[in-house]
Length: 132
Image (cartoon, rainbow, N blue to C red; front, side, top):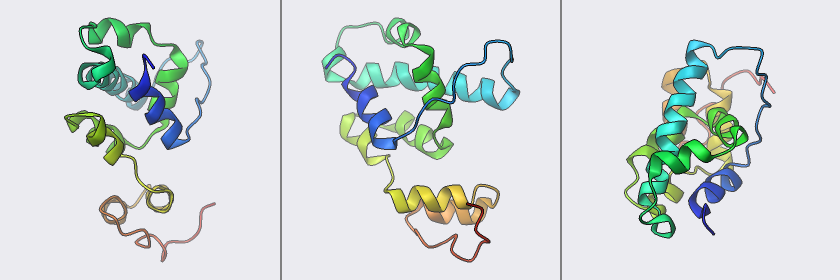
């Protein structure tokens, strides 16, 4: 139960790590996502009642690379929402339903539609050509 919040996030999103390719350096976008994930993990530790008194930065630094890889594959809106969460319930509220997530991924290159998806319109991307 030590990493309850992190487990809930990973399991609820259903994401898998993309694998670690140590020979390939991070792109600027990947470096930014990795940095955001580091801050997010520290934030999750800080708000987790199960980890009260632990140093958030130390706990985040001790996480395996696979946790960072999984975090980096999540949608930026989800990471941003979780960074603003005040408690575990707030973190859970940031996890969208599957239809919302599917909509966001279909609209990945159309920011105005993607924003509607994130706001709860699961059908906002229906008019886009299927890319799946």
